[in-house]
Image 1 (cartoon, rainbow, N blue to C red):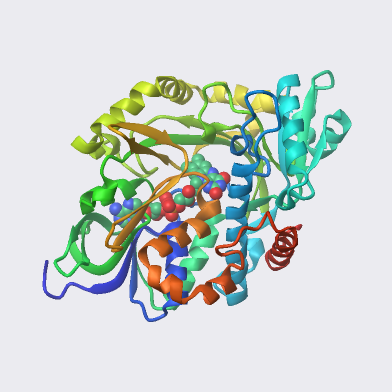
Image 2 (cartoon, rainbow, N blue to C red; image 1 turned 90 degrees about the horizontal axis):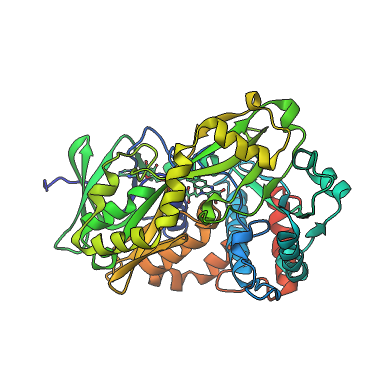
Length: 489
Ligand SMILES: Cc1cc2nc3c(=O)[nH]c(=O)nc-3n(C[C@H](O)[C@H](O)[C@H](O)COP(=O)(O)OP(=O)(O)OC[C@H]3O[C@@H](n4cnc5c(N)ncnc54)[C@H](O)[C@@H]3O)c2cc1C
């Protein structure tokens, strides 16, 4: 390392929604911190956080069945996981409201809009499950306003595109108007714009290749493109999406040992044809095919980008070796280490069905994928829909004993000395970025959080408090955030 290496209090690697959120927390709680964000691409939010690289669902478990799996014996399913996801999304709603009030985020219509969330199922088994799911959720404060129907005419009113030609089928649907469509890319750019105006340095087109521990406890950050630039930081947050694992591995921290990353690619079908788009105003989730991973639950979504609606259907999951959409086919092979070889192999062996599913999916032609849409939208016309590649998901392979286990959630990895943390995994993703980044802040900045609880509560009134179990509090938070974010409820 050269003597004049620029030194920061913090370096955030990657300019996606996670680093942007973390940077805002840091600057709000300690404006004096010197911070740099290093991004390998031209500008922020071009990987998973980009508006078309994800589905833009504000995941609040209002419509996604995988957050409330059925019971094994036909009894009422437990709502606990759904409530937990919803509370995390409401945490985000509070932070984003605060950011709007502070001018960090602009007009909410530029990044969040009300779009009803629906679940739509066919066949008596799934209808029975949906009916029981509704019986449980309708009385939970955070799910207030959920409607249920098995009536063809009513479903036709809610979502005509899905229902044509299904007069004789057994159908069930729920709808809740407090659902949202979110442009996480726009949100990221607005936050980073505010950070730059508050002395945070954004360094783009710069690829971090290595992290090395310094004798003083900080970190040396080396880049490979441009070659061999060195920076130093007292603390590092690795918000590099699919590349987080390889940077944490390069840092050599004990806590990252044994972890692996399982890449899952995604494609969507999209239509901008106004004649089709105007027939659908909802995000409709259904049941995943047998053997399909949770992130491939089919959904037909209204998207609002720059105020213009489009429809998106998918995702069509697949397997390839890249950890980022703009990554390399060497990503997976180069991530294998003696410490994670057995976890990788054990996940491959225990998930052969999943691998087979993903490889079959990726080999499907556009025509075959279109047939999947026709199962959902019986009268869809192929010429209206375009197939495109979305972001790459990097699922977590976590060590479990001597073996490994595939996880579909998000995992924070932080060093015992509180000098570095990173985020692995992709789900429920950007929706819960505010809560996940608060968890990182609590791990890396325990004293700062302890000393600023009142300030944090001003940002997020539900900080360290449950919401759903206090109906008056839940109602107030939903009402207050809906007002600021200009949402239905
Ligand atoms: C197909 C798909 C659908 C999804 N749907 C939803 C959804 O509906 N709702 C939802 O809430 N979430 C969804 N997600 C998840 C969500 O998009 C992600 O969880 C979220 O965007 C991750 O943000 P991030 O900041 O961690 O990563 P990213 O947005 O990927 O940002 C990481 C950044 O780090 C940069 N970087 C990487 N390596 C380096 C390096 N070595 N040096 C410098 N920079 C580096 C990258 O270029 C990138 O800009 C979806 C994801 C996918 C792929």
